[in-house]
Length: 343
Image (cartoon, rainbow, N blue to C red; front, top):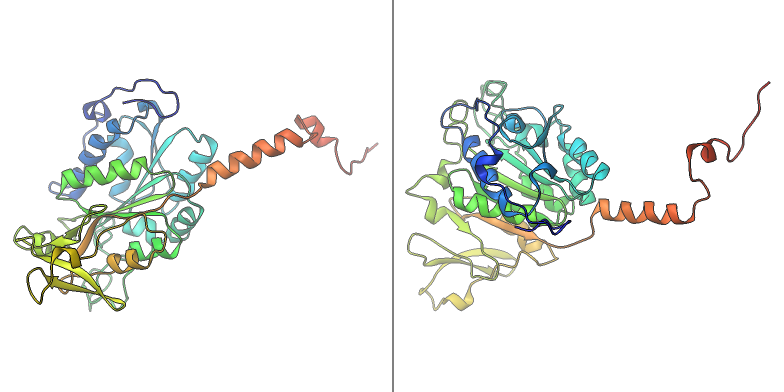
């Protein structure tokens, strides 16, 4: 690979990214698969190993920096987006990845999360969504299904859960993708696309917590149902799914509808074709909000729209001020404007 900034040849392998520290996630936790996926994806992106920074907050997912042989920061609960933003602005050449959970990002960190997206800072946010607080032993989170019994909702939670993708669209997000932890090849490809995107990329990974919320995504991830309940989106291709690849999506008025190819005169040409580059987010939002079993859950890169980034605009502004200002050093600043001499 070639470094996109220096045009130098970059060669490191997934093995080079292993820190050597013991991975202390529970056996069977989906986090292991996500770690494997990122270690496979990063060598393909053309960045120097020393230019990669992993930032995390607090939670099971936030142990991630310890297991990566890169620079990393294990920071404060809910503040990973703010710190990742600061890292990128301070040194725009760095390739910044934020590893976070549904509690860390969407509860205490919700404000930082939406504003990082709104600003379109060139950071990559990987959101581990197991719909529970795992590190603190099983309290409901902002994505826990309504009615689910947890340690803090013994009669079932009465809250309507967040849909992370819906939040991204609402915050004017330019890149949103969704994957599942047990599909390593697909998740790796999605992370490569996210890392190649210029702007804030959000990748939600539906991840299983084997201890406190086992099977929360089983309705769409179990082997015997996944083909009928996952729509794997590919740019420029018809929206086809099902064990026999005979089901698809059409737009009926203002609503999506599942149809069967060959019934009622429906052919492949009648199906919607995926366009992640579409600036209008209406269809992307409809795809994000599909739920099983009535609809398949949309998996893959759902939205990927180019736009200017915060740090690029900031660098332009700084350069413009430097070119015109009379203040060239701190003394110039201190002795400018209204000053007084005190005797």
